[in-house]
Amino acid sequence: MDRAPTPKRARTGADERSEETSGAPLGIAAPSSAANKPSAPSKASVQQLMRPYYGRLFPHAEFARWLAYGNDSKHLQADAGFFQRREFCFTMDGDIFIRYQSFKDAEELQRAIQLKVPAKIDIGPVYNVDPQRRAAFQGLGTERAFQPMERELVFDIDLTDYDDVRTCGREGHMCAACWPLMAVAVQVLDAGLRDDFGFEHILWVFSGRRGIHCWVCDARARQLTDEQRAAVAAYFSVYKGQEGGLARLALSQVSASNHPALDRAYDALHAAWVEHILPAQRPLDSDEGCEAVLAYLRGDEVAARLRARWSRGGARSGALSIQRWEDLEAEIDKILEGKAADGKARRAALARARKEIVFAHAYPRLDVEVSKKRNHLLKAPFCVHPKTGKVCVPLDPAAVWDFNPEEVATVSQLLAELEAADASIPKPANGGGPGWERTALAGAVETFRACFLDALAAADRQALGAKARENAAAPTLAW
Ligand SMILES: [Zn+2]
View 1 (spheres, rainbow, N blue to C red):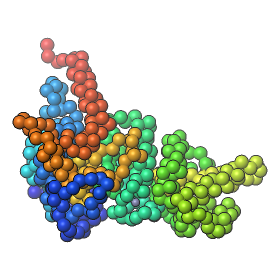
View 2 (view 1 turned 45 degrees about the horizontal axis):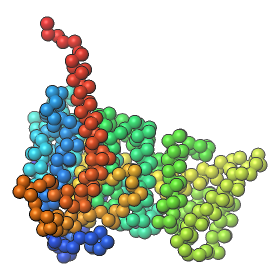
View 3 (view 1 turned 60 degrees about the vertical axis):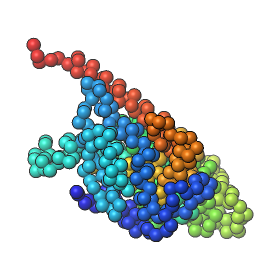
View 4 (view 1 turned 180 degrees about the horizontal axis):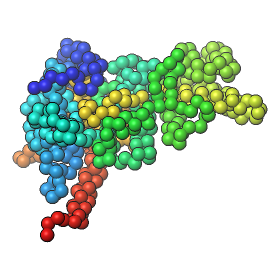
């Protein structure tokens, strides 16, 4: 058994370890209702529910079908050893990480999950050899050494990285008012991955607490080297932290126009800012929020004018931030429409400032370290977050604005639903279908299939067929 440091990043592990384990355990038959929000369950009580969760609710078949990429078929070109070379890491109760787990096939993986009942499952890369046999390959030349061969291109976005622009809470906090920041991140990255890189098989997942994960699963993405991954991550790293009260942004400093991908992102960010983020976060309701925004005008007299007007207060209605933003845009537009030849530099600076404000508040803030290396582990979809008890459910990027993290089912709610379903409609003699079909998890599995798995499986079949045709056409050495 390997005991490795926290596979993702230290602060996640530290955060989960510091969680309280007190509190009344939630019974399996706890009443279930999304409207009737239970307080956060204790970690110990969530772990108690993991055995029945893996036993009857976890969608083992769909999960393994994804990770086999068609190699679980009887197809002649299927690589029967592919699944066995994938690393899984189980986090056991007590924060013991068992790395380099590998399994022959879907059945063996399911048996291990149900037997060991991990608190968390992380997915690692596919290696050149079975990771359990890695010791035999250590110290060999680079050609034969134990090394990752492929891995999904992954992205991790965490709301804790937005604490300077969130007004509703900090750190582990997550609510419906935070969600627009995640929704626009999905929108911007999804468009970039599809339009600029041509990727098609993209899985978005709510991480169960305060963030989102993205898995890019096209064969081309899985085969990227670490250097190429770093380049893709850099491409999306427009937000580069804070300096002197302003965000450091990879935007043009010489003009208001940018790379077409950034112009496309700006359109999405601006719409999200006006329609969702301003009403939900109300950043311009407070003096500090106003100053943080006006700082981007860098002393232009527009800032002084707005500050004077805003200091007279305003109706503290839900619309105050929206009114103030419209005010700011109108003031900037007035200058931009001016024709004075000597005002050119000022006009460019103000146009740029408006973009900076929107990018600073809304552009996706990536944890790039997660994306850069093939051997970085990432929590599997359909895991249960040990702190919240919420299932890491797949997201439909086209419906991401309708998603509410507060309404995601917890493991105790799902098990109560299953119990109620069993009581009202007795299971057929053959056991019936998987338990998730009788609970709210059915919607999440349906999203997984419809938004991701069905198209991926079709592409996997096509790839095996193309490989067969290639091999048939290749000249043979046999006479
Ligand atoms: Zn919030």
